[in-house]
Structure formats: structure tokens, C-alpha cells
Length: 351
Image: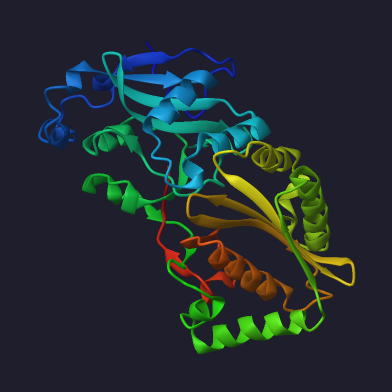
């Protein structure tokens, strides 16, 4: 049987699974000596690798292994991106008999020609799904190439020391612990003097315009279209194509649209700010458990200087008011997030 480990994926046709012995990946050589000394030596000959691409099979594996701690752990969110992109999934799974012990949930990005996490590089809080951390080392041996898996959370996903050297730092995650805060003033005290001044000053500047703030989870699909239009307008005059709105990509737009539709385990709401009936800003918020995620936004910074900081203030206040424990502003700093958020290390693997 041919194991999938090539620079080009198999046919797009979705197959039930392909299977091979783990020994094809880790023959008993000096290089692999540590695998046979860490307590797995007795079961390694019994282990099989199966690659699943039928979406129902992938769903069952995801539900079996996901801890559902983060919104990115939820199948409903990941599946939204599958609905948007329709890239073939490849769930590399280690079995003992019929029992799955670990799985690596990937898909193949047909444009970038590389394997990524199932759901794309936009996914965060990525961990290795395994019942035993020793098996994570085995997952590294069955990785297909070329591969680019990002935003790996090592604090919640242990791997062997041998493979740590294969990882490099990714953009950090921007989070703010607000557990126990009773007011925005308590949060402001945690910021340095300069950041506190600018945040409050810009908030008061926009507040003096007597804005109308609407926070709603009603009519979400229409509000999403408003967000898309505003976001495209906001970045349309950027010279660099990479800085233009990614909502011009129909697949990306559909992925976010499906996120709005697939709410249930997580919730979606929008924060709108109007100045004299003009939409100055709109943000897309996702909430799950005790975490408040600021996913996407658009504003008219040319007309309303400081509107970005105003939105940060409003959303911090909203999160505190509704007793969330953390605000998650996601990866990529964009030159400002570090002023108001703490940064958590994430890692990536590119081979």
C-alpha cells in the first residue's frame, strides 16, 4: 500500500481511508532508537496509519479528540471554513486495531500547494490531538510534505524534545485577562501610562461626537454583508495587494458567512458605531464559554481619527459588563495590539 507522503496530494476524489503500518515511517534504526525506548516499543508493531478524507469520518475523529476549550476547537467553526474553501481534508490517524489513538487534522490548500491545519492558516490555538503525549512524536513522523501548520499552542500540546527544534516562533497571540474586573477603570490600570492615555483620550474624542453604539446579535447575516462592504471600502486604496481586504476572495467571504450561520455552540454579534447616522465602525465578535473574540472589523479612520481605539474601549467594556474572563484579539499585531493586550507565544512548522 502506498502511504500519502508526497509533494502533491492524491486525487481530489474523497476516499474512505488509506492504511499502512507505522513501521513504514519508523523502522528500527539508530535514528529512531528513542521511539523504542519510551514505552511504546511493545505497541509500535501493532499501530497503523490511516488517512481519512470523508468529511463524516473527519467529524467523528474531531469530536473524539477535540477538548473544545477554544472556539477554534469547535467543529462547527472549522467546518464553516471547509464549507467556504472545499479543500479535501486529510486526517492522518494512528490506530491500534480499530481504536484511534491520535489524529493530525489537515487539509491540502490547492492554491498554496501545501498541507495546512483543517480550516486554513487562519485557525489558532492549534494542538496535537492525542490520547498519549508520546504518540505526538509519532504524528511528526507521518507528516505529509510540504506542510505549514501554524499557531501551535505548546502550553496545551506537549511534544517530544527531539521535534521542538523543528518548530519556529509564529506571530504571538494577543489576549487580555479580565477575570474579576468590575469596570473598565480596573482594566485601564493594568496598561502602561501612554497606552492608557491614548485609549481613554480617543474614547473621549469619539464620545464627544455623541455616537450611537449598537451591540446586537439580531439580523446577523445582513450585518455581515455590511461589514464586508465597509471592510473592502476601508482597504480598497491600499497600494500593496496583500493589504487589501481579503473579503474580495469569495472563498474567504463564504467561510466567514458560514461562521455567522453556524452559531450555536459559539455565538456571534456585531458592534456598530454611528455618528450622525453615518456608520463609523463595525466589528464582528465571537463569544464562546468565557472568552470574547474580536474577529474582524472595519472603520472609517479617515473621517474619525481614534475610532479604532474607541472600538477597543467599547469592546473591553462590553466584555467586562458581560462577565467574560478573557478578550482574545487573535494573532498579528498590526502595530497596535501589544499596547493593550498581553502576548502569548505560538509556534509553527514549515517543511
